[in-house]
Length: 322
Image (tube, rainbow, N blue to C red):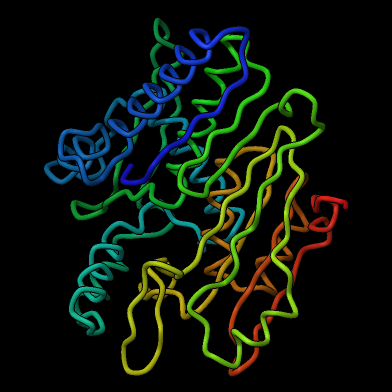
């Protein structure tokens, strides 16, 4: 998935640990072959190619693709469109803007927005009596494209963690370049320690102000954490810094610098919500975090010369006590 993965497991023997970790990474590779929009041979790429020839026609899909899509549509509804798995056409345009340093062409942007959003993808219930689990997906427009970039990493982590649990591994951590899930604590400890990354690339005054905000360490057990922001992928256009994270409502990148960290019961939720809250901003985003069981969030952003930090009501419950 373009990032380094680290799987840490505690097992009865080194051989058992190695075998379990390799199996978990194999499961991640399987998910990538399903959800990647960079791989022209992936299942989602094949679905989009088929739908380009016959838009609106349901196509049978694997359990993995159906499950990932179902979870994506849940977050689309829960965030009122701030999370959108059909954002692909907008993502493509914004990638070009990040390369050229110019805003998207207005006509192309309007055309891309017209084939995204609610109704552009439909997950159809199973209809085969002999195969009750078979599901089908239809894309409403020939140019509708799915982009699992805001949820696929978390989904793959959860699937790998499930595989480890099925193999009897009770204590594990999976770290996909900062998107992290943990199960039971390491031997001799009562939690895993996970540091929250600080907001990077701040104006000088905000960087000085950030000294007032300590970088927190989380105490996690059977939980996941994900951080989204523009620390490494951004572009400055007409004096404004834009993130690689696309706002589906505008088709443009989120204005930064900004960083959002979300804790949840599973990595799929943490991944999707960190993306969504980045789009929504602190007021609306933290309200959603407060409404969801087991979820906590922390937003950091630059406001003029000041660094602002706000957290949801449950955030402090996850901080390590010293």
